[in-house]
Length: 106
Image (tube, rainbow, N blue to C red; front, side, top):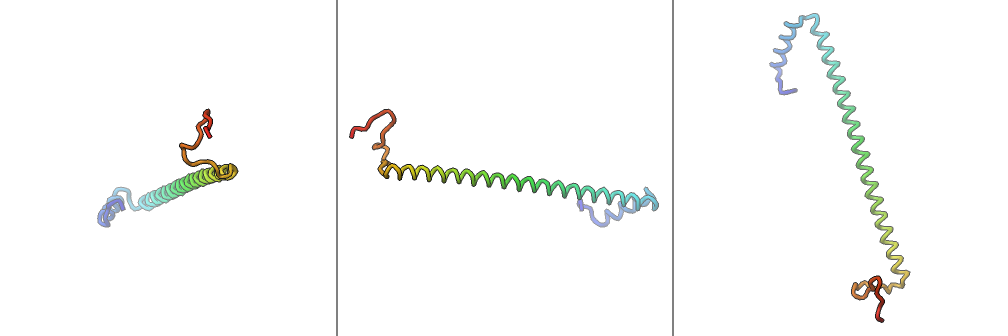
């Protein structure tokens, strides 16, 4: 705990007992204990909220990636259907394909 050993804690407690007195020491210890408990609750809640937000972001990114993949597959299927509709005669050789604005010589 903070690099403090048991002998250091004992010395701190003895000094606190001498400075604060036996009547106020339990009250101050309770107050410190409550403050530490509240700090732990707040930090745990913050960590839980942060983890939830990270999970939502990861899920949104996964959905976006799946949507992009589905759109890519749909475009590929549409292109394949268009090629099949042309009778499969579309040339894959760029030299044989017509460029826009030119007519074929065959």
